[in-house]
Figure 1 (spheres, rainbow, N blue to C red):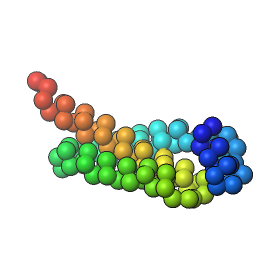
Figure 2: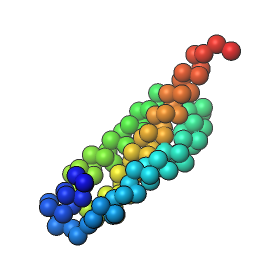
Figure 3: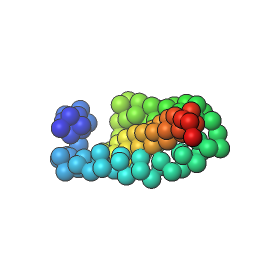
Figure 4: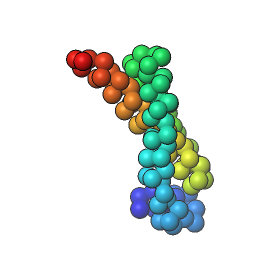
Length: 104
């Protein structure tokens, strides 16, 4: 409801709740698809590097969602992509770092 009211009141877009109802499922799909890629990257590069790169990319995407006036569909793509890659990368890198310290 907050995103819909922002696009209606501030940007004057004609949107409804149905426009954004697939936003969080899309974030979860991107997170699920990105997790194996980030897991592979965490093996080849250090988990710390993955966390730093994903944080910079994800936070830049989310920050630009807050500052740039864009269409609702561009907002959905940028928000879901940024948050999905951020979540998938951090989960994979943190899991890889924890697994490396567990005894056999």
